[in-house]
Length: 252
Image 1 (tube, rainbow, N blue to C red):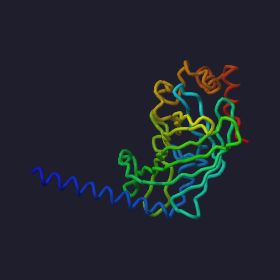
Image 2 (image 1 turned 45 degrees about the vertical axis):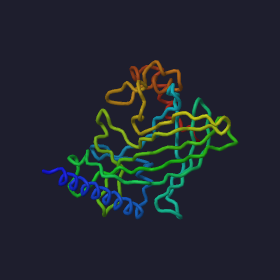
Image 3 (image 1 turned 30 degrees about the vertical axis):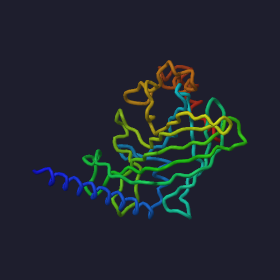
Image 4 (image 1 turned 90 degrees about the vertical axis):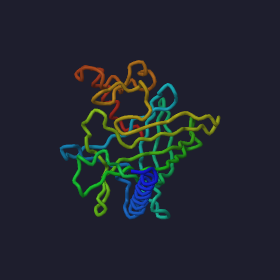
């Protein structure tokens, strides 16, 4: 095939992909994706419903533990691609309330999971710009900005669903957020990432194979209870106590 023909084919495919992405974005306006981006429960590989866990996260170069919980996640009445959110964050025991928005900016076709799905369904990746404003009156508060990528399943007729295919696989992850936290007081910024079941760009923080597992050298950076809950014999007294601590609803 001549160079000109190859270029034309490439451009046609590029334009087709762009048109499909724009069509997906338009379709998303019709749906409420709040329970796709922040579900209460999800269906695992056996189709059994299980509780959706809060994301794992870190802040700063030393992988200090960062926790986030959304108490409200609602589609905006003013813009069908915007979601108004409220919640709380916790770092080193410091808890801050926040308000903010998720704005869906792109919807891309994800063909990496197509072989595991019904032919009528499509895997999609929903890209959202995120901005969260922590309460300025609270100590250690700031602004969180970044991008969230949510994997979902969609057939164009029914509602989109959180993609929990291969949930039990070693490398499963979803709702991957990469961004920064910037202090109101100092203006200094720190890396702030989180995700469902795994954290993006987490370096050697996560040594797990079948599940998220903390490298012991970072245990002292807010990960003590998580490490003790899952590193050792589950019948140990410290493991039992740590699991109770992990289960606490700290945002209430």
